[in-house]
Length: 181
View (tube, rainbow, N blue to C red):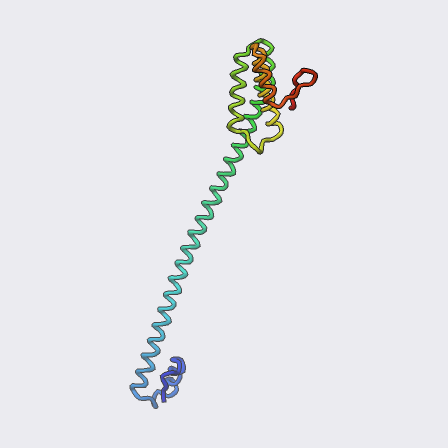
């Protein structure tokens, strides 16, 4: 009466309706099959629970990683902003040294101090200058190079001053070197 290929649910239904008509072997077969099916379902449920736990652990790890990445980005953005602010303040200082202080030191004849200031300005631009310099920064750099020529001229090195003027891109007009700044 019971066929082996029939599903366990049909067999359990058959057992419930026709228990008296089934032999002990058929009853045992149905009950053992049902127990085996229950065990298989429990095994699959446990595997699914374990997979869900693993996926939850992965999700927590990804969330932690995302939070750490966001925190690192926030720190990097903050550092970039501080660096940009510092660069802006350094440029203001360069502006002061290249123009205001330069004028004051020239006026009182302190060429040696002026030379030291100018060397530091040029070193700054060697380190921080580049292809993406802003126009104001380029103007300060050019003024620094011009200041070098002025210092050389003030020290009596006319040949060095003329060479410096040529190096910075000046052109002679009627024998007078004019800067392109």
